[in-house]
Image (cartoon, rainbow, N blue to C red; front, side, top):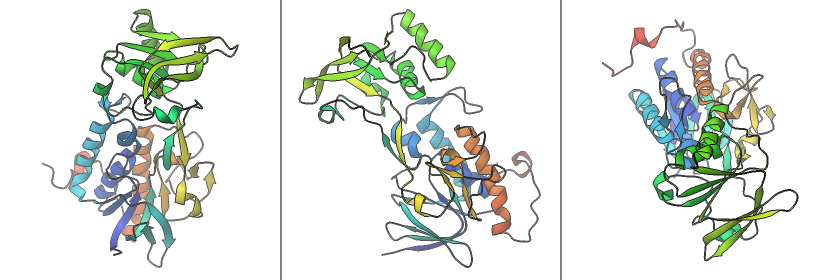
Length: 338
């Protein structure tokens, strides 16, 4: 049976940025309902790499993705957000008092404003074009790492030259029997510090750089890999004895139903005003990776800032005529906190 709810702000997306938006709205005395197609909080962070270390969260020299999400949930908890997990939002329609947000399950949330914090929208890994790869997926070929311990003692081929590939090279080097890093050119797209650390591991014999090569084929049977073949552009083929392949070639992004909501888009992103995070539709805001404006950086910390900007811009919609006097949390404290 359809269920109807009323709240101040409907937040679409329960990733780190969406969770922090609950806190920012709560500090301005605005109630939130949070909707997410996944069956848990954390979004891409928890679905794709819960044990991946993150190094650029202020105050945390290193924190794993799942732990960051736990901390953000605890930070939002005093404001009693209502979570609707496993609910993909299909429609967002304007009403006389704000917006009607409807999910594929028939749940309806009436809100005075909407924050879209949907990350990259619907996402899935880009699959390398290797013949028969489907037979190995889930057993020997993995597009994400949920438990580092699952890869202890493995002979691993990691393919890719971006941050995700190098993050897992650095993280798994201490567990794996051997790691091959496959990249089509000597220059990597990852953070310079990560590249330097990987090169240091290579010099120490902890990992082996196989450059310039690309994935060429898989050998094995019944879903169990025995080797991965790689090749240069000139056709030189090399066989690497391995039992695990981790290809990191980015995510295939799809806005899904969001593309039908009449917002100004730039490819797979929603255009927003950088001062307020408001979209082309007044009252609808977008924050985090899905939002775009000149100079945008796809960093969680930027999404946190956008959450604060959006909350302050929403305040007059929820509390019309009520002056908002900016105060620091050190002055106001947090409800329920000592």
